[in-house]
Image (tube, rainbow, N blue to C red; front, top):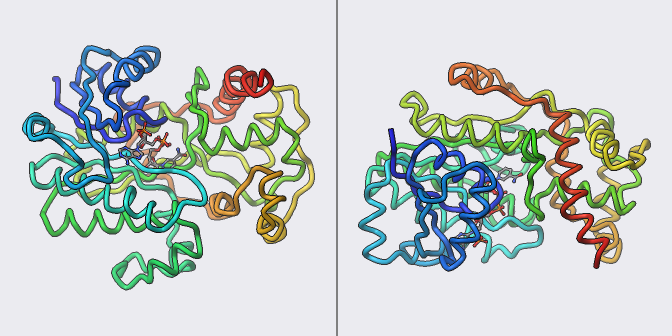
Length: 359
Ligand SMILES: NC(=O)c1ccc[n+]([C@@H]2O[C@H](COP(=O)([O-])OP(=O)(O)OC[C@H]3O[C@@H](n4cnc5c(N)ncnc54)[C@H](OP(=O)(O)O)[C@@H]3O)[C@@H](O)[C@H]2O)c1
């Protein structure tokens, strides 16, 4: 059955894979684009990822604009959307509070309002930090009473990207609850490249890590042997997201998309170093010391790392029983994460490192 879908962030990494997945399943996919004139480029990408380009359309708009900057005609067309997938966000370290709020928080509220007003199921992408309640409490958020949060303090503490994602999540929950809208939230771990092709977009946190390793800027493993960077492959993630959207039992539910087989950080570096013929670091550097070093701008520039990224390296383990059950129920196979890491490293080496070497 073909269903009308509206996707924000469809030009991004996860978004491209989701658009490919949905269009390959026969759905019509309308993508919010700040630059709709780039539709042909997106279609080419979607085609290379196995999607069906004739089912992919652009809708001009911007998360930062009132009512998403949609034309009246597009607004009418979008009323057909059974599902609204919200993936659009400005992901970067060192954003200002004002800008990250304008795109990530206000943008999320605009998308939620649109979905609620036209009775579309809203599927949003949060982040696995929202499932780490100890971390949330530690940074001043009580998930049972998020309205009591001193948000400017959270922005100062964890940086604007993460804080705006957290604030957007709670604002979306509140808005959808007030409007009696149907919401499903998927919380991914850090996203790894495609399990078979290794496809990943430059700018993703894992690409930055692999590049730093290749450029000799990662000479010690951050944290201890207990520290890990929880991962999920992009293909497994979009299968879960797509299945969630059409599963009536997932209305009002949140799903943590995280592969508990993700190795610790040291082993992760071993996996990505091996296919690139590199030596992985063997010794550890404490996160506290690294944070201190990164507070010195020339060192942060040299190491090409931002202290905001360190929060995602942690020792907390997560209960993944729900996602395993959900995946089994929908016949979604979980790829081998170690192999996926190797494929991702090979992809980064072929497409992005070769480019940097050529410059
Ligand atoms: N990647 C991860 O490891 C990870 C992990 C957990 C959660 N997430 C979340 O998953 C979602 C997608 O992440 P991603 O990695 O695919 O991001 P991405 O590759 O950086 O893509 C971001 C998308 O948002 C769009 N966007 C940014 N600002 C916009 C604006 N003002 N108006 C309209 N669209 C705008 C971009 O469009 P343009 O092409 O116009 O720039 C792009 O399509 C985000 O919510 C992110 O926080 C990602």
